[in-house]
Amino acid sequence: MNQRENTLRAIRFEQPEHIPMTFHINTACWHHYDQDVLQDLMEEHRFLFPQFTRQKTVRPAFLLTQRKDAPHTDPWGCIWKTTDDGITGSVHVHPLADWAAFEQYQAPDSDKTDGTYPINWDDIKARVSKDRANGNLVAGGLPHGHTFLRLQDIRGYENLIFDLLDEEPGLFKLIEMVEKFNYRYVTNWLELEPDIMSYPEDLGMQVGPMVSPELFRKHIKPVYQKLMKPARDQGCIVHMHSDGDIRSLVDDLIDGGVEVINLQDLVNGIDWIKEKFAGRTCVDLDIDRQNITARGTPEQIDRLIREEVGKLGSRRGGLMMIYGLYPGVPVENIKALMDAMEKYAGYYS
Image (tube, rainbow, N blue to C red; front, side, top):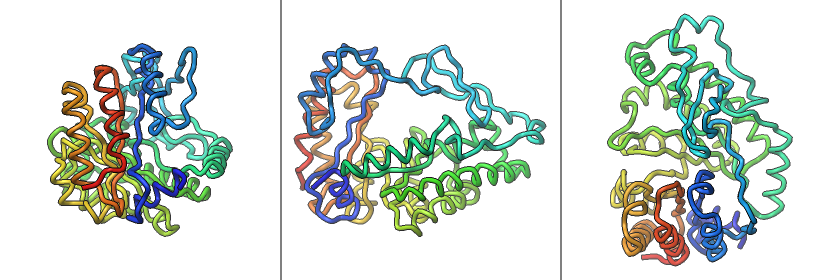
């Protein structure tokens, strides 16, 4: 069973061979850790890194929003800054902080950009063909922060929340502009017939969402539904990612067409996730990066992964797991996490 078939079986509750496990190493890690140590760990964990090839020196390519002391102006006019190569920055200049600038404001071309970075659809087509030929899942999707966060980047968070509350007429036009851009981008992707379409957008804070459920339902959910409908109509799996506490929004996300929900474990609660989704909606579980893996012991990490697999996993499927490594995690904890993800990939309650 190849990677694509195993993942599709997990999503569809059709008895995958194992729980799909993804271990992502952020590019900043390559200048925060000893490169040989990281590569040794990857070499020792071939289940997580089946395509790994050792390099004498790893020189990662940093995205335009991840370059220290090199501000990036995206196609919407938002200016991004970061203080560490490899760590995605934040928007420091909002092009529509004043509505007076809206008269001359225009959306970028979705045939040339995803809204943050330049794109080449011929290159994307070539990558899709390669993935399909290699038995990999063909994954398309909107860029991270495509709607709510895009509006926030353009207007600024406080301005946006007041706009939503006041029902600012200019905001309705801006939402329509962002929606049309995203819709065109979605349809471009669907022409390539991906297996799965992702709609990544952080909506949660440490406690509660960044936007009230009422405002989300009124202004953001209808946009999500329009953007997800072409994928659903085509039979494409709809995947949604959000960091933070999204418990008060999740019913609206599922109602909007989400079939795979990627959410954080501890901030939402493992037991809550089990009660809400286990056996019904596929959970792509985002493993804790704040507490246990960063400051706990290897034994605590092993117990965490075993608990999550035991409570959310099933031989039928319905569980995938992903971990994002960022600087600051002790090396012994990195190893413990890799060990546990491999150890429990075939474990069920």
